[in-house]
Image (tube, rainbow over all chains, first blue to last red; front, side, top):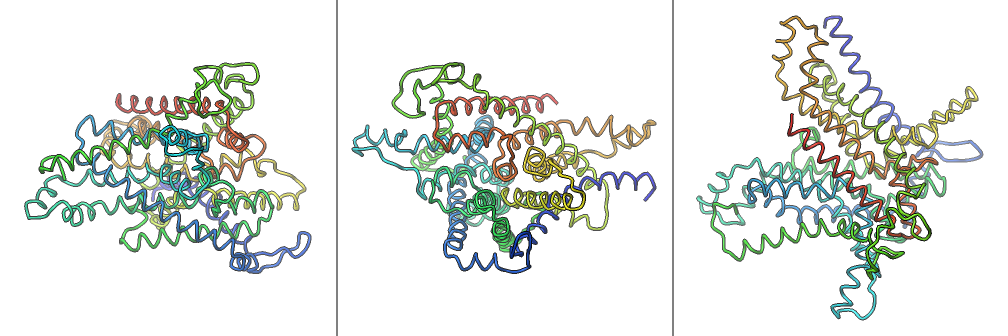
Length: 285
Length: 283
């Protein structure tokens, strides 16, 4: 490299390295180090696996962890099932102006803070809320119905909050599928189902994978929706992390929890990429 | 199932109805928040007590409107300040990264690219606590060595800005890289043939070409920062940005004041989004 090119290279490399090392890599190593130490006295620490043992020995922690994972997988599946037909409609059936309008309509709710979206669902679902009033008015219930603070409410909120991150990649991948290919499928004797299974879904796989990864991540790491819609007993793993850090001030255990959450999400993301033969680079970048 | 393939009327109708229901589902929570901002009642719920603008302009208890509610106004200011810092920082670093990955080949490039993508797959709350833990390790270390307390490393706005920047920078990098890849290098060479230096060529040819992406990245970064919750929650000090301030109020019970703030937020972000669309159409 010429001297000036080299200088340019170093100048461009520095911000990247500073960002990744100081804000991503070293903090995570430090978090891991904190998670494997045990407090034995005032400002005295020993290296031990005590925090991880606590996690595996306390049924509440383990149950919350598994519950969060299962509910996040479920939320991802439901989002995919709801979003797929809509994305197909936008990508393949709607044309011209209608297509553009529908796509923008999908984006709008997500320019608004998650807090506002969750607040909207609280107004709809709570005891004095719209749905409860509607049911009473229609004569289907004779007293206010509380629909907030249960798992279904959490699920509605999670699916709603992450819908965009499924619709956008799905629409983008399905738009690139040539109509002629679908027609060829029918010409060769396929019906709606087999064309869907043999042509559309394989073509949309990259979109399905990247959408699912993002939705899963967002659900797993969500704090707001489970707390607001699930109430005190929502048992979401991020709440445990929050309470260890901010309420109990037990950073060692909190760091261990954080590390476990990171491990779980990395494992599932890696597994999904492995299963479908994709790489992080082509899925995210 | 595409328009050129004949389908039975019933299936087409059912499909259309499903898509219609989907958009109703999308619109419902937001419209309900907006409507109840005008309810003349202490609670954002039925019954409807009549139309009022007091939750925006009211200045006497019990109905103090947004524009007279000091803590909320201050929180909006804090959020805007944080978002401005985060978006400028992210676009600057994103631009630098885009040039690095587009123009140079070096050992470890692939690995660095993967590392650059990682913040997108780390849960926001984990990013928050890792930065919290690390910054207090550094702060405690400095205190023991030099008896010097660095306030910036304790929970507060500096950490909030760094925490949000740590993942928004990835998005800015991706947005700007995507446009830089479409750039025709021969334009830059032409400028250099006409006597421009390398930097001048980049400044007068490449940067104007990247401008739409940079503005887009700036706005997206601003909005993402403004509405960020998870990372901010772990790093916040005494100055709460708007999302945290609203969350604290929501826990205590809600009044239509929150609906009014939410409506303003919706208007604000739609306006920003509209500006970007117009800007990009013009260029």
